[in-house]
Image (cartoon, rainbow, N blue to C red; front, side, top):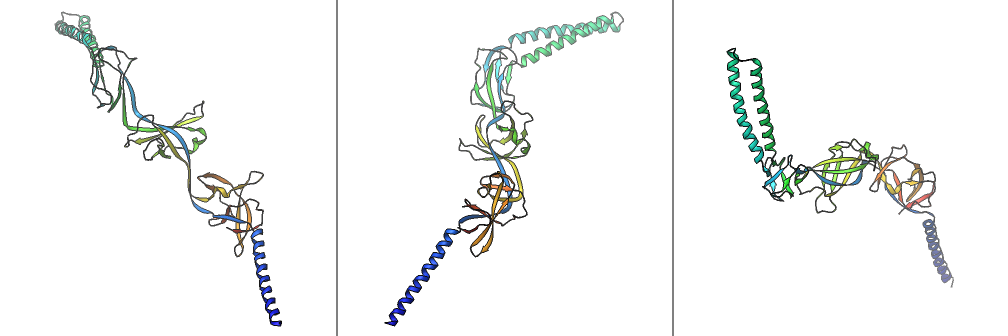
Amino acid sequence: MNKKIIFASLILSIIGCGSETKKEEAEKTTVLPLVQTAVVQKKSFIHKISIQGNIESTQDIMLNSELSGMIKEVTISSGQRVKKGDALVIMDAAILSANIEELNSQLEFAQYMLEKQVELFNQNLGSEFDKKSAENQVKSLESKLKTLAIQKSKMIVIAPFDGKVDQVYAKKGQLASPQMPLMRLVNTENTEVVASVSEKHFQNIKKGTEIKVNFPNYNIESILTKASTIGSYIDPTNRTFTVRAKIANKVGLMPNMLAELEITDFKIDSGLVVPSASILKNAKSQDYLWVLKLDKKDTYKVQQIFIDKIMAYQGQALIEDHDKISEGSLIIEGGARGIARKDIVRIN
């Protein structure tokens, strides 16, 4: 009977101890909050801005005739590639040709008269005035012939650069004039991306700044380039300046294609970097971190450290150097709600 009583007492004692242990663990779990942590890193940090731009060709023009005239021949059609110097539109130059022939005849006679006046002058039979008049007549006619020759050359519209004829407006028999466009000529081999950037980024974007060009509307791989030109004028209507970057067109880019520019406006080789979610603000809008110090096994003391955030990008934040924070410092990234100074926490 006594043995049964002793055995029962031992069982109750063991059950009681187990219950107390579970109770302690439950209390520990309830009292100590669980947090997610991150480690402060010393590494490079970049910041980028994303801006919409478009593709432009450095050689994209509407061709016009310099003089008026009847179109005699259009030598090309839309979509055709041309070389620099190729004749594209030929206008009727019959009147100019006739004028040139007439002046050539007058020039021949004027040269003959000059020769005679020189002979008479050398024999002291002619006056210097007559000789100068004959010389002036020759020079005047030569000048008029040169002008007509230039005008006649303008009756043929030539390609000013290698390119592709996008669209032809000129038609045979039509009267061309300087105000009337004849065709659009585009060279898509030399292109650039152009974007308007807010003036607040003016100091951070310089010639040579890295730019990644994406094409969200097209199946075209991203292109890495650098800013080639930075505008020196702020548009008063939208407070922006212009950024241009040249692109070697090897993928069939066309003018006015939409592009998205990722511009690296800040870059540092080494700095303290933390997750953006780990930076909190107090009632005074001051930024701070919860830094953890080992207390006991599996428990940590919480220390509030105020910091200066320089900037954030894609979930990472760069902070200024701090004497209480260094590379490898353990900080709270998640679960910090309700935590106060000198609290004890556990890592989830």
